[in-house]
Length: 261
Image (cartoon, rainbow, N blue to C red; front, side):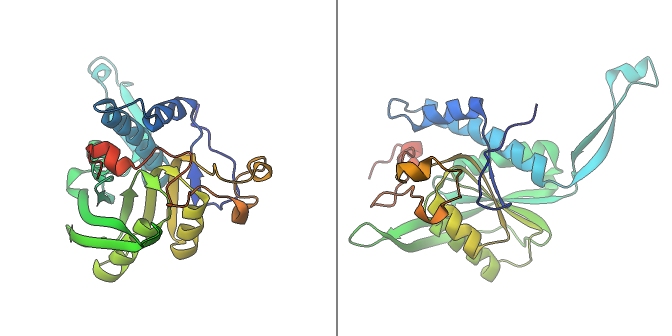
């Protein structure tokens, strides 16, 4: 049985998984009682599952034939299956710091299915900028390490929290302006997203496909929460006055790195 998808009205480029098993693991990750090393164990397990969904839906596919161990005894010992095209190029982008482990997990899994010479990780050091009222007013990019062009590649941004969309959109603008080539597909993969995030990304980067495990709109009015997600999009709220996600999971960049500053 394939993983269920959440019904919503955010458009065809938004995919929100609705897996009870993954929901349970993400609930653990969101709990203040859960600390290291369990935090990073959960993060790895969740991103492994999320990236499998991305590969299933976004990879180009080819037909494969594998001689199994039974081929020694019968000419019927050949397994035929549909698999990701090993010749396709994939670029994973680590948005440091919360995106470091997710990018590593995606990179490792991609290398098991794609020809390793066709897979790479880029590194972009970016964080949100806030004003005196702690409102997000943009991002600060401190540096990057880009491994080459992205022409005809699947470009993936695995960043745990899709809150305001500022980091993702600015990272996308950076690739459009500064990195040679045009990717064949752009994918943003998150554990949690807000309606505000989805509005910004779908407006500013309509070419991007968004994958998430959970939609958080906990500050929406009760009558809005009773509707299908996206039906009353402009009335949905998932960000508090400091633009953190509610119910959310806290600042995962801090939690992942045990860096509470």
